[in-house]
Amino acid sequence: MNTNFTAAADAVLNDVVTSTPRVPGVVAMVTNRHRNIYEGAAGKRRLDRPAEMTTDSIFAIFSTTKAITATAVLQLVEEGKLDLDTPAKRYAPEIGKLQVIEGFDAQGEPILRAPKRDITTRMLMVHTAGLSYDFINHTYNRLAQEKGQPSVITASKACLMTPLLFDPGERWEYGTNLDWCGQIVEAIRGCRLGEVFQTRIFEPLRMKETTFELTDAMRQRLAGIHARGADGSLTPMDFELPAKPEVHMGGHGLYSTIGDYMRFIRMWLNDGVGEHGRVLKAETVRMAEKNQLGDKKVTPITGVIPSLCNDAEFFPGQSKSWALSFMVNDEEAPTGRPAGALGWAGLANLFYWIDRQNGFGGFWATQILPFGDPASFIGYMNFETAFYQSLKQRMVS
Image (cartoon, rainbow, N blue to C red; front, side):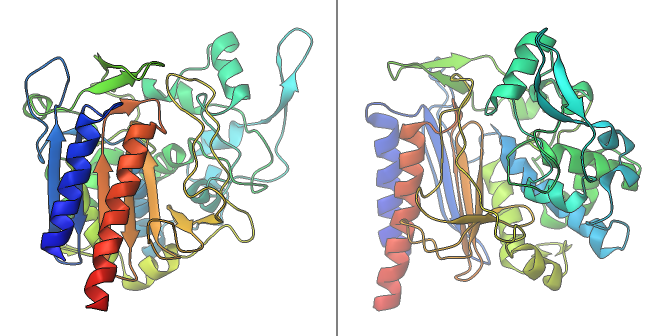
C-alpha cells in the first residue's frame, strides 16, 4: 500500500499547489496505530516569501483544537470531578448568565429571556447549548456589527458572553461550546488550559510543539494565512492569534505541527494510549466515539462573513451525527471513510479523520480563508479517497 499510496498522495499535493486555483502550501499525513505511513508537504509557507512548506511547519490549527479540549474534559469525567449532565454553571458560573435572544426590538436592542433549562457540559461537547459564531450566524453577526460583541479571535472573556440562539438542548448549532468547556476545565483544575494540556495530554503523547502561545523558534516555521479573492487569487495575511491571550480558547486557539497532531490521532486509534503513557481509558474512548446527539443531526454551515466562511458541508446528502467531540458520518462516505468514523476541521481549511475501525487517521493542513475553500477541500477529499482506494486494493490482493 505504501508505494502506491505515496505516489498517489504526492500527486494530489503537487496538483493542488500547481493547478488553478491553487493552494499556497499544504502538509498532509496518514498514520496507522503505530506510526505515520505518509508524510507530505508541497508549495510555500507564504507566497511572498521563499521558504518551502515542510512537514515540520507550524500551523494555526483553529477548530481542530476542539478535540484536544474534549479530551481534557473526558479526563475529568474519568476522575469523577465532572458530571457531563450537571448544569455547567456549577463549574463555570458565568455561563449561567447567558440568556436566549428572541430577536431585536424597534430600537435595535436585543430581546432576551431566561433559558428554559440549564446548559450542561454534555450540551457543550455536542454543540446543542445554543451558541454559535458571528461568521456563520446572522444574529451573532448583527450583535458584532451593531453592539460591539467581540470576535472569538480576540481570545477575551467578553467574547464568550454571547446570548443563546435557542433553549439549550433543542438542536445542533456549531459555535463557542468548546471554549466554554475550556473554562470548565480551568475552573476544576485550578490552572490555565495550556498547562492542563501540557501535563495531561502533550507530555504523554510527546507533543512538543503544540501551544496557545507561539515561541520565536516556532514563528520561524509558521505557515502564513492567505485570503482567497473572489477571482481565485491568494493574498498573504499578517494574521496571528493574540500572543498573550486572556483566555486559552479551547475551541480554536492552538498552534501545532501536523506531526504532533498525528500523535493525538494515534492516541484515539489506540484506545487512549499514547507513546509515553495512557491519556484516556479504553472504555472512555469507546463511549466518546458514539453518537451523542440522539436523533438530532449535524446541519450544513452557512457562511455569513464571506471573508471567513463559505457555505460548507461534509458529504452533502448524507446523515452526520456528533460524538464527544467529533463529527460522526453515519454512513460510508464517498471517500471510502467507513460509517462511524470521526473527524472535523479548522477554519483555515484544515481537515482530519480518525477511522478506529480500520486503524488509520489522516490530516490535511492549509492556511486559507474563507473556510470551505474549494481548492483545498477538493484536494483533501482526493487525498482521503486515494488512501481508501489503496487500502481497498491491499485488502483485495
